[in-house]
Length: 279
Image 1 (cartoon, rainbow, N blue to C red):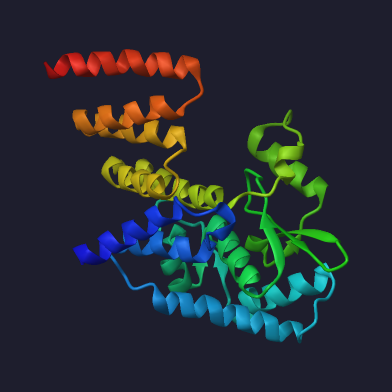
Image 2: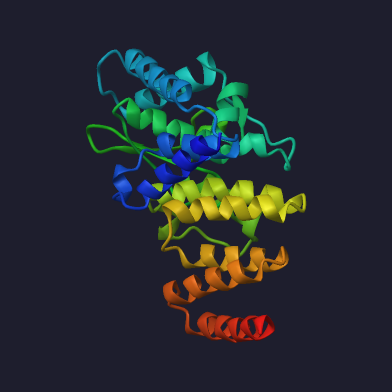
């Protein structure tokens, strides 16, 4: 099992050397899920995602179709035939954010369902991207004529208009919140994976499992080692666990990565204090 875990970690580290567009979302999410499940085998789940994509292509009948047809075929397979559903009844259930467990149960949190739909759509040859929208994992499909359609994977592909996006934003962030261009920006693959893992990290923190939350952050650092805030999070979690030397190492990495001068100064002061305690 240790060997399997080591291979999974090595695979995540390989993603750090890949161009973002070369990272398969489903592939990477399954590696992360397998790591959380003590080295479970990913191949059956890879095959299942491929099978879903084959069904989507069959539903399309070999044609491209308009956006509405593309979305209808995708969610006919994922939502109606395979019955994937949102399950947010238990905010502490980590399984709801693990792609393997979600495939087993056919239910999970919106971010996982969004990632699954995005990956299956791409495997089926559709032009699709996840949006950098903070409330729901929204997906934008494009057709051969250049038309685009935003849908909500957690609502079986329901079309989402700007007015609905605005309402979601205000409900979550207050009445002063407004839609901005960044909310329509395509999310890259690493950011999608970080979003998924952040959900898992927060679930562990809510139950007081800092050790498990740290393991999640360290898994993110394997494929996204240049994200400065992850190093800071790792350092502070190590401190909470009493791991002074690993905390120092992580915070030193943070200093080399962050462009924020104030954060760097505060961290340097903390490092000086920590190193002083070691002597």
